Amino acid sequence: LSLWSLLVFDLAISGGIASPAFAILYLVIIFATTLLGTLGTIIFGGLSLIVTLGLYLAENNHLLLPADVLTTTRLFPTYTIILLGVTIMLAINARSIQQALNRARRGERNLAESNQHLREEILQREKAQRDQSRLAAVLETTSDFVGMLDLEGKTLYLNLAGRKLMGIGEF
Image (spheres, rainbow, N blue to C red):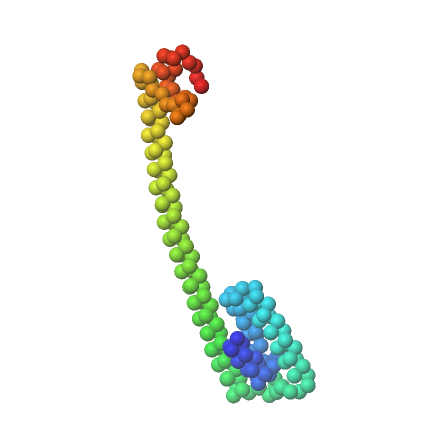
């Protein structure tokens, strides 16, 4: 906001809307969008519209120096401020992008670790299912009577040999 205020001051002393610095208001809105999102765009866009209207009214009421009075001595500070402002805004923007990339990389590492953990868990479950299937196959093919009852005496499992011995079909 202080850079923006400095830009507005520079616009007021260097020719208003006709100043070369006027186009920097667009850059401020772009950087506000990048750094602050939609709300920043709305705030700085609204402020820029107000400044534009103020500069227009000031120029029409002859409160600002006309653009044709601008000399290299007057333009030097304007261009210096523009250069400094753009440099600072780009540095801030680059830092913001770097921070976003670092957050994305951390998230990617965390996701890779979670995926590895899930792969290991899936492999353990698949092994347990294979072991269970192998045990079930052994129980079904053994010639011994194998069965399981609950505490109330209800049959939970009875292998093929047990069913043949008891004369029971599939249940």
